[in-house]
Image (cartoon, rainbow, N blue to C red):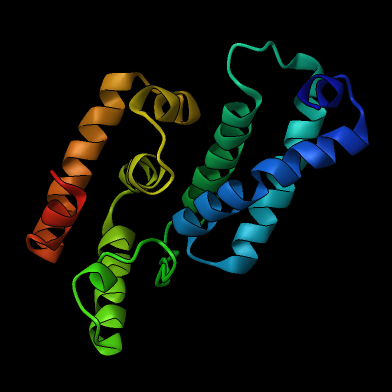
Length: 177
């Protein structure tokens, strides 16, 4: 499918996007915190990807390439509107639900996590989302963000420290760090 999509087969390209859409949509929403902005960014990113197909060299997996395009489009949007605030990311993780059965405690935990993530700089937030939420390894996250692997590690370190400070020991204990 990827090979035919890369040759400009529009139907195969749509299938390729469908394969990765959920993760791409999740990354964009979690970075931007706004569904309308996410839709705009995804539309822009998907169009950029389609137009860039002839120049795809295969240095990375197609999925990684798509994530990088969405990541860059999201960061560009954040830079254009530096005052944008993220909204609660209720589907990020259920850290609180692993520790409590009370729905009010679960919601409060998710809101605390969402607020702590929203307070992170976009580059650190992206590192946490790609590695901790999407399950990417450091090398793949580095490819997506267009930075060295060590930079991903340092961004994660700073982000996790900030999350620990904002959330207490909950993040650290739940993530096994």
